[in-house]
Length: 239
Ligand code: SAM
Image 1 (cartoon, rainbow, N blue to C red):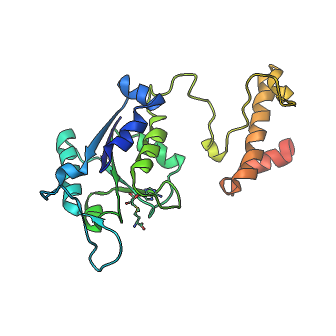
Image 2 (cartoon, helix red, strand yellow):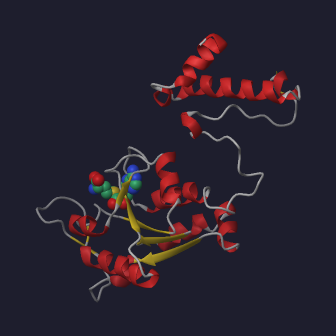
Image 3 (cartoon, helix red, strand yellow):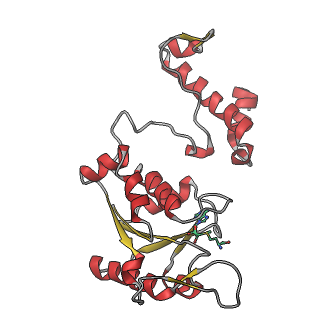
């Protein structure tokens, strides 16, 4: 999978993605992250890519032409029109379903805005997907792009080792993951739940499933709306 990140601050992306699991995946050739500095496509001698907003108001707006040229250069390079994701607070918040959907792409362009954002005309022309990483406003789209790359990369074959790819993860089937424990068996007076030491994998699976439902009900009840999980755990076999 190839990510192409259009940004005014390539070093922000590079610093994050070249570290840890994504860094290893890039090194081993399972994915690549190319950063493109939008400033390289500036039409001005000063290399500026922002200007005052029409209609007045605070802040600057990124001009359409450098963004358009940067996207066109990627299209020319890869020989097709890839999906172009604009990171913006004006969108639905990224979730696991969207992450899995994007992971099916061979190429993904991630467009990071700055200042007051990007001239809407170029967004209308090049953007295929609008994605927010949360209902708050960031100073730029780079952290959003890094979040998206990290989440999507987990679905790219080869990126996670066997130990890293859990059979169950939070959000799978709209449930949060059950609590996890490691050594020591007793820590600060609290023992690991005995079922986990029983060696009975049917019982362990049942316990984990119930804990997932309980945890989801406590922390993210919105995920369980219209869900059959609650019934299963509330009424057990009788349900
Ligand atoms: N004026 C814009 C508005 O009110 O919608 C906010 C611009 S914000 C200061 C600058 C850039 O940060 C945006 O163009 C976008 O790329 C990025 N950004 C801000 N919040 C974000 C979020 N929650 N998710 C993803 N990207 C975000």
